[in-house]
Image 1 (tube, rainbow, N blue to C red):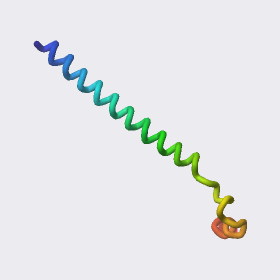
Image 2 (image 1 turned 120 degrees about the vertical axis):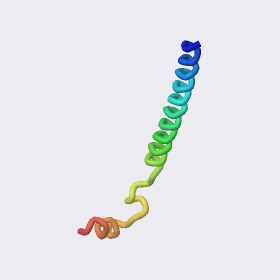
Image 3 (image 1 turned 90 degrees about the vertical axis):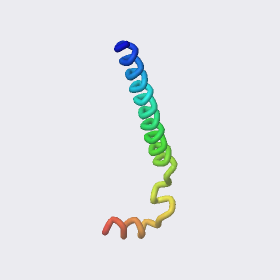
Length: 56
């Protein structure tokens, strides 16, 4: 019986690890996707505005 309990617990831990790994990949993918779609500031700010932000 002890072996069955260990297998059951190992299976549960493995399933949890897989779910958490998938969640991590989804979150990382979402962040990378959002960053790749973001327009560069030069597309919507004037050169003067960019210089002002940079303190020049």
